[in-house]
Image (cartoon, rainbow, N blue to C red; front, side):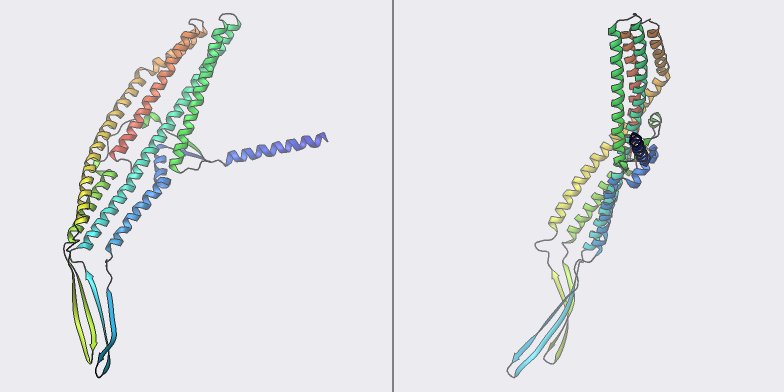
Length: 409
């Protein structure tokens, strides 16, 4: 009986372990580099699907604007004609077609084409903004990977110091306070590591959402945060930024609509023909109808389009000025932070590593008290965090430069 229960427990544990291992193996790992992340965003980002659909919607307006507004009209009449000698049937039939002789159809097509260009540019601008977010998310993931490594290194050193403090307390070299303080330092270091892991998980989750990667997949970012912070000159002119091109297309659309309003001052004509039978006579007539623009001669359309054009020109000037400032600021920021990081690498990294080794060795030898070691350790850890922040700032500024200059496409 006991043997059967033991075998059942072992089989259950084996099945549970196999199921857990299978679940663990079923989770795919998606490895992405910086360029791969941008390529995935262009290919499958959920946010771009709606933007591209809006661009196609705007393009369909060109076909709608090309259609003639008024279809041919056919009319007919029939009835008796009463005379003293009797009733005679009489009938007539006619057709006419209204014509826009002021060029309204061409103006509508021009406005629709400008609207389609604006829709395409806005779709490209949505991609520019998305790539900026993806770039920031990827950089944040690399940054928190570095912070995790720093926190784990700090935790290992804190645990080593705590072991030394425990041994010194056991032999009576130090009191219980020093041991308690070293234990507290370990707890704080472990908390910092947990906080860095949580921030890294958050950064990767945000990046997965932007790239359309399933939540069940594990994301692994591969790259050098230092390399991403090396500044590059802006590769394109500001006029090529899609949001500026969209505003310029909006202005062309407003101008075409203003022309459409002015074209309404020209009377529209309807040409037609009529055939009628009167008694024994067949009558064929040509017809001409004129719509006089007395009350509505496009003044409302012209006023609205003109005001919209003025507003768009002011908006374009403001956006262009802001883009220029953003580009120059990002360029200067990237260069300064990158130079600061390189200077720290040349002047600070070696003394930092040497001070770290000397401080720990001095405490182990009993040359300095624990309080002084912890103070030195805090400075060393903060120096490493400052260096990581420099790399983060330089990489972020470079991404901002690519976004503000329109390099993200």
